[in-house]
Image 1 (cartoon, helix red, strand yellow):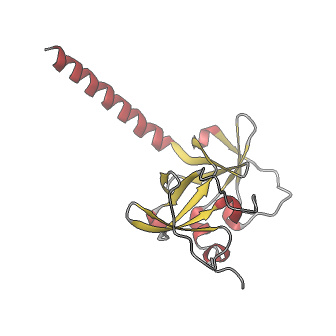
Image 2 (cartoon, one colour):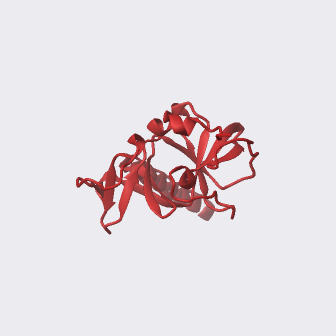
Image 3 (tube, rainbow, N blue to C red):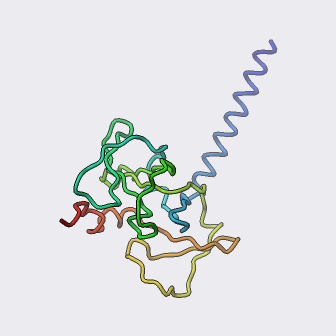
Length: 175
C-alpha cells in the first residue's frame, strides 16, 4: 500500500514539474550564451538542440571558423566556431570545451554553432531593449541589443538571417 501512495505522490510531483516547465518554456524566448566574452541571445524558436562537443571530420580548404562536420543525431551538420566567425577570437577553441547549439530544422540548414558557455534561458520581462545607438557597426543579423537587471548587455542574433548571410554560407577559404 505504501508503494502505491509513493508512486501516486511521485506522479503528482512529476506532473506539477512538467506543467511548470511548460509554462516556463512558453515565457522564455531566448537562449543566453557567451562567445568570446560577449553575451548573445539566440531566439529559442530558431535554436535546435544542445550538444556536448564531439569528434568531427575536418573539411580542407575552409574558413578558419568552419571546424568541420559532425554527426548530430544521425544528421551531418557543419560546425562553426561562432566566436571566430564574429571576430571575437582569432583561432578556434582547441580545448574541446564549449557547447554546440544546432540551428532549428525549420531554417533548413544543417549547422551547429560552437559557443563558449550556455548561460540559461531569458524572457522578455528580464530584458529591456537598448535604445541608444551603438558606436560599432553590426551586421544585419545582429541588430538589436538588450540589457538585463544587472546591467549586462546582450546582443540578439537572428539565426534565420545568419543562415542566409552570404559570408556565413561561403565556407571556402581564399587560396
